[in-house]
Length: 248
Image 1 (cartoon, helix red, strand yellow):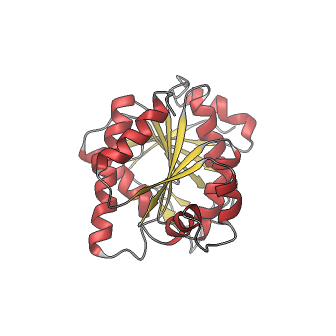
Image 2 (cartoon, one colour; image 1 turned 90 degrees about the vertical axis):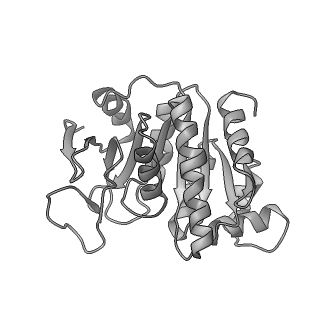
């Protein structure tokens, strides 16, 4: 494991960054980044925010502002996502900032595609890191999706014996891999039905309607449930907090 270091974003906020080469290095990296106080709830956020109309986008944004960030703050749970300045990762970071959140927000991205502050572009496909995250793992990989298994593994190591849950919103091709890795890790998943694309295909399968073949293993796991995007925010809050409290 390379020695963790700190970067400062243009918003003058600092984030700790660890580069890991194998899963066995994750515990050491967590300790080095002062995330070793594990065994508390973990929220994994996967998906995207593309091809949404304005009204739906605002509803998704409110999920982060009114539900996900407040729950993470209340429980001081770690939140794990893809860490780049786009889609649901950007919304998570902005929601944490808007509420002055202090919960760990951990991004996981392929090292060849993560654009750090004041560093040259490594690839045309590179994306800047989201500047309101508190911690990042840079993992082996040069293609988006290489981080999928790492997101699941880091979330599991952070949680230890504590509960964890994945929330899937919208999403594209890579979201299928993210979802599968988290379900294979034994982590339950809440699909936000009505948020579009992957989420809606999974929701269709949960209703017994025709869907993508990739939904079959996820649904067969028995770990996937759905909450409607249009539902009252208390529904999602209650569902997540029941998991964190060990009631579900």
